Length: 114
Length: 119
Image (cartoon, rainbow over all chains, first blue to last red; front, side, top):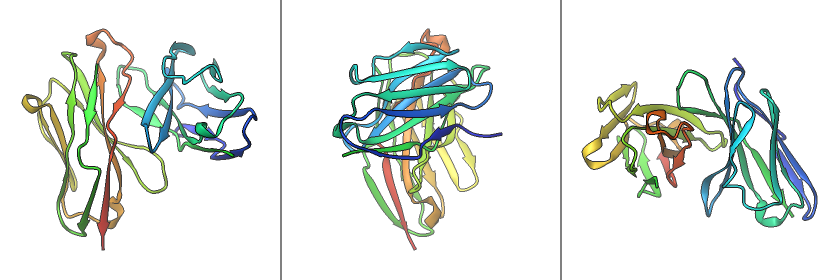
């Protein structure tokens, strides 16, 4: 079975540009999580969805960040406008049905904002 | 509030040595889960193990073993006869269980321990 798929793997953009990160969870998983990893702050949960509905977005740093999950197989994390401090690795993870709590992570998107 | 502490920031060992990575957690939940993830230099996060709070049995998987002690709120990870391929950052994580009413299994991660195995 395919794991969590993220695209792009690397993104370099200039300050002020819009950035869209994409995620395809493992088929059949009903929870989807977006994390950000930086050296200073480690792994931070940004937002998570259950059955395509956002449940908790308290980790989203500010209004420049938004996330959507239009269907069970696709989610986006958008930053508009991007700033250099948004540079980080962004991970998407999904969790399966049946009560198993472990999350499976995608390969991450390394974002660099110049 | 939940908290996971991995006091060892970096560890270096020579190949074939045993190494233990420490993890101490704090939670007010009566039932919870503990996890270990591995992040090799390539960057992906790989799930290694999950432990339920009501199951304190230690677990061994090949060269890996995990020691869960509820009395000391610790969930330590030992690699026996380390190999260069074990070089990675290892994260300990904690989540509440559905029985605690959270229902979301949000993961709280430690800061990670960077393990370098020297040939």
